[in-house]
Amino acid sequence: MSLADKPYIDPSEIALEGSGVQRFKDSSHAFWSGIRDAAGAPAMVLFAGMVGFGAMGKTNGMDVWFTSATSFLMFALPGQVVLLEMAITGSSVLAIALAVTLTSTRFITMTVTLFPQFHEKDRNHGLYASVHLLAMTAWAISMREFQTIEAKHRLSYFIGLGLLCWLISVPGTILGYYLAGMVPPAITLGLVFINPLFFLLTFTEVKVWINRIAIGLGFVLGPFFFILDRDTSLLTTGLVAGTAAYLFDRKVLRKKAGVIG
Image (cartoon, rainbow, N blue to C red; front, side, top):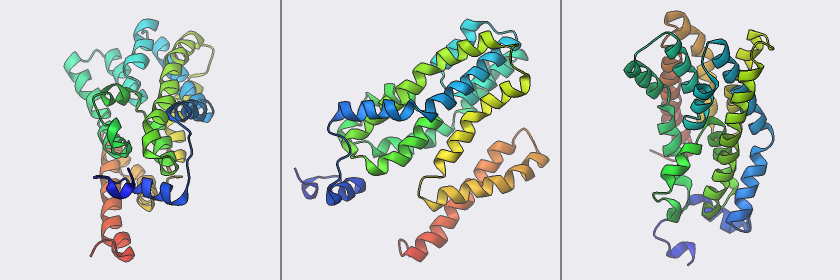
């Protein structure tokens, strides 16, 4: 079936077919390419972050089973840190669940921007399992690489990429747990923040100006909102910077390009 005969046409499929580009031979090739792409800097950065989290768990009196289980079951470092901190302070289960849920709301936008880029035949119930592999690193790299990958191979690539990142999270957490006390606290905290920094640097490579505008506004507005209210500064910064970037993109950039009237 040609693209012209399809009821749904992925814009990237048009570009790839028109240019004659075929990055992967089959789904297996795409899967192992995702593994290889994750095995470099992404895996090392995520591993370092989990080492820092494991050390945090040990120094705050949590056992290794609880600490490592959060990496296996949650696989969301910011949410894991919130869970750990609130459990230490003796917060109620309901309060902890609410706080962790709020920190994980970013996955909603990550899911609705990434998963529609999969081929139509891959959008089925199997995605409920695949979504567990969605994390900042895998999302940012996929958003960048999907521009050069045929839609039919994107899910396989994503699974390879996300699977390796997920599988190394538990060993990293356990290693950090048993290394606790050997590493200065400042280095431990620094390891936790390596992953968000890598995500930021990766995402700036996505060639969409709205992303760069949002990141730039976040740098400018973040300190201001932190001074106003440190507890809600991150949420407020993201909301204001993201909304401003969206409006600027819609009203100025797209209008200038003739996309909208």
